[in-house]
Length: 303
Image 1 (cartoon, rainbow, N blue to C red):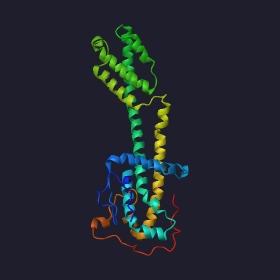
Image 2: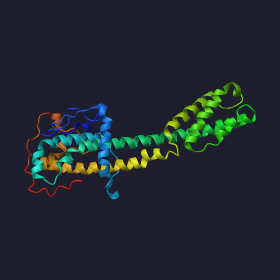
Image 3: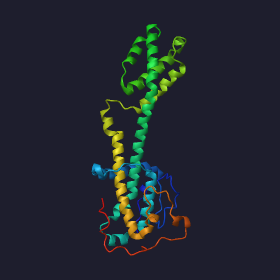
C-alpha cells in the first residue's frame, strides 16, 4: 500500500495530539522540523500555478485556521488511503493522486497564510511606529532648529535632517535626531524641552522602522518581495483549491461511509474529535458499510 509523503506533516499543531488521526489511520504523521519551512515553500510553489488559473469569481476569502485545516485534511486522507485500490477501480473519474496531494496542498496554504500574516503585521507595526514617530520627530527637529539659531547645534547637520520626506526618511531622521540630542546632551541640557528618554526613544523607533520600511527606489526588491495584496490574493486562491479538493475527498468519504462520513473525513475547521476516537472500541470498516453506487457520476470533476 502506498504511503503519504511526510513533508506535508505539520510540526506544531494546535489540535488533538499525535496518535488520534482518526479511524482507519494507517499513516503515521512524521515531522522533520529542520525541513519544515523548506517543504512548506516547495508545496506553495507547486500549487501556486494551479491557484493562479482560478477565475476571480470562484475565489473564496480565507477566514480559517490553516493549521486546523491541515490537521483535518491529514485525518481524512489517512482514513481514505486504505481503500485506494477500490476507489481507483470503481471511481475512475476520481484522481486518487490529487487526493493524496491534499496534505501537501494544505501545507502550502499554511505557508501562504503565514506569509500574508507576517506582511500584515509588519505593515501594522510600521503604521504604529510612524504614529508615534512623526510627532516625536517634529518636536526634536523644532528644538534642534531653535538650538541652531542659538549657535548650539551644528547647522549643516540639522539642515540635512530637515530635507527628509517619506517613511524611510522619517526613520533615518529619528535615528539622527536621537543621536544628535544624546551626543550633545551636556550642551543642550536646560536649554530644550527634549528629554534624554525622548532622544533614546527616537533612536529606537527610527532603528526599528529602518528594518521594516523598504526603500522607495528598491525596484528589484519590490519585484522579489510580493506586497500584502499579492500575498493575500495567493493565500485566498490556494485556500479555494484546498476547499474544492477537500469537497471531493468528502464525497469519496460519503461513498465509503455514508452518514458516518464526518467521523472519517472531518470538515476543514472541525474541532470535534471523532466519537470512535474517544470510545477506542470501534475499528474502522475494512469495506464500506453500505454498497457503493453503481455510477460515479455524482462525483465532481477533479481540478
